[in-house]
Image (cartoon, rainbow, N blue to C red; front, side):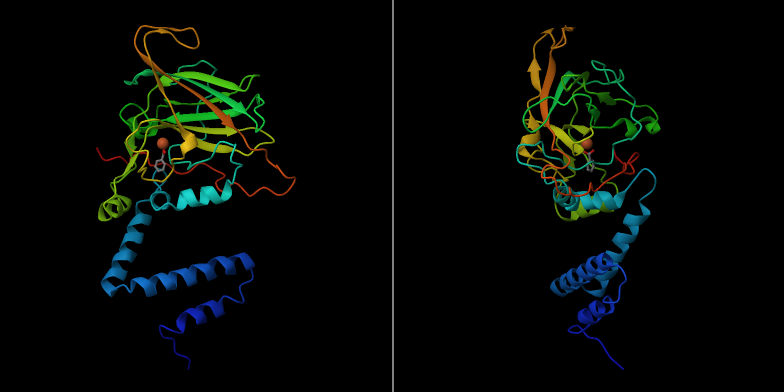
Amino acid sequence: MREFDETSVTAEVLRRLEAAPAPRAREIIGALVRHLHAFVREVAPTEAEWAQAIDFLTRTGQMCDATRQEFILLSDTLGVSTLVDAINNRFPPAATPSTVLGPFFVADAPRAALGADIDGGDGSGARLHVTAEIVDLAGAAIPGAVVDVWHADAEGFYDVQRDGGKRRARRGRFTADGAGRVHFWTTMPASYPVPHDGPVGEMLAATGRHAWRPAHVHFMIATPGYRRLVTHVFVAGDRYLESDAVFGVKEALIAEYRAMPPGRAPDGTRMAAPYRTLAYRFVLTPEDPAGGKSPPAHRDGPRARHRSARPR
Ligand code: BEZ
Ligand code: FE
């Protein structure tokens, strides 16, 4: 009869994985066992702490449904989503960096015409005119890219968090023109807390962290021959840029949302009140820069959304 103790159990678990039919499964589960056992040895949890951890993970799972994904939020707030994003999107330094997708993307965003106002009419923030230019690494325009845009309102809520999530606002799917440009009107987004009324909120509180993300507009840009870019453009000067709850900020993604006096906007519109403008150049990475194999995109589909998730 073989017995296992704290010095021998790890090796035995790993030995039993050796017959795994899929080498990748053996690699992944083997690494999980090694790191998990090392973690347990380091932390030396009491049995009460072990039970607390099981309860935390159970409640994290129970919080998940079609509109709330607490496990992804846990991944986001522990920096794992940023790590997975970084590993899977190693773009050249001259390219626009990617960042986390977040839970508020919807795949069926309404098609929007260039120049449209995507605010939906109920936005209370300052008017914002956005011009996005999409270019390659040499600075040449890329015409015809599909550009998804989505962002929070002036109170920090996404459309999917309001009114049962039925009405679409501050999101749209554009097609870049022949000069690789997209332009539209909307309202200024505000910073907002990630959903913190569940286990992730408990984890943040227990570790003395806040739940806030700096204000930003999300962009997803896709066109044949280039790597899909999932990113945000953050508002320069936001107080949470240095402490984003999901570790998504990158220097190259911070831009001036310029405060403009009343007058003529970039598209010729006469503005009676002060407004803002954002002009941002997105530099896409070719699909296959060296003729080799590109790493796979790590997220193919939309994530379930935290629709009802914001405690007020
Ligand atoms: C977002 O930017 O929409 C987001 C990202 C991660 C977690 C929650 C929200
Ligand atoms: Fe967001």
